[in-house]
Length: 411
Ligand code: NAD
Ligand code: MG
Image (cartoon, rainbow, N blue to C red; front, side, top):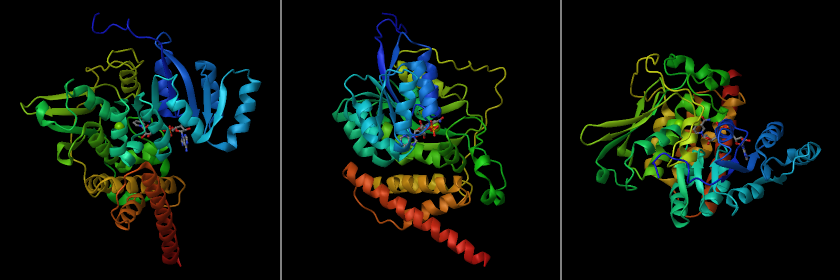
């Protein structure tokens, strides 16, 4: 069998968790190019039932899941009216059912935030090939997540472009947790620096959600776009990389590369650096993981080195990107700290998007929440969820306090 042949592939059934989001839509774009390789088992959405319907007409899934119960009845009526044969399921039970079903081969985990934890774990516990975009689930439950993957023979393939790049640059016999055995000296995690890399720091408190979401290179959902502007995204990715590849904090160096052409690199002890490059389009890592270990066409424009701008590299500034360093600290403190930070960040980013706090207050809420939480052991998913909920309540309280102290300042 030639190494790059697709001949041995059978039709793979896929569940796309978070189908209506940015990653979900890119996944549908890639699999639609390969009807001979993939068929859709289930699509899920939180509330965008119009897009879910359009996608269902294209992909003919056996199930769709609507998470927000306010849209469920309307979705059922819409799907029946349009003559679609698929069953409409509701909420977390529906997500868990379609993620863990015995009929499914692949699960794309692309729900945003902590809401993705239980459905992604359901896929892991059922021993699926899991295409992991939902980095938050790994940030919250890393040790338990990796343990569950090992116990159930689940294959985790990274979708985050940096982790997918690292995965491609590692040797095929890489031993989890042992970079020395593979002759590796450093993992170079690249990031663009987002839309505010060169903005005067004095202007950061007053930047708007619209400006924060206007990423120079990547077209993404709102939450990850804000995380990219604060570089919390790189912080979450630092934690994600530790769990995915079994790394120590000192194994990873964050490198700013504003052009987003190099998606990350692996540096070897002999001085070699292997990087993965390409145009910034998530269909590349999605196609890589879908077909792994083979290669399929993704629809991404080939990189043209005659038109690529110069590559540049710098170190992220601490004062500009406090969230990045907060995440690295949390990663060193342990699982409770990364869970608390992730929850605080989801709450503070949402408050920023709703105009309740300023951009620089995102990091203030996150830091204060971490400081006010004492160290505790998270030895079960229930404990992770309890810790997440507690941190959300604390962050909401901190945001209220901030708003009332701002009011007092005005008075
Ligand atoms: P998005 O906001 O565009 O889409 C999120 C999806 O999750 C939607 O389908 C939405 O319906 C669903 N969802 C939201 N809240 C939900 C809830 N409470 N219950 C069930 N479903 C819910 O987000 P995105 O940009 O596609 O990102 C998805 C995940 O992929 C995130 O974890 C993100 O960090 C990761 N990721 C995204 C990119 C990117 O380029 N967009 C790159 C790397 C990693
Ligand atoms: Mg990324």
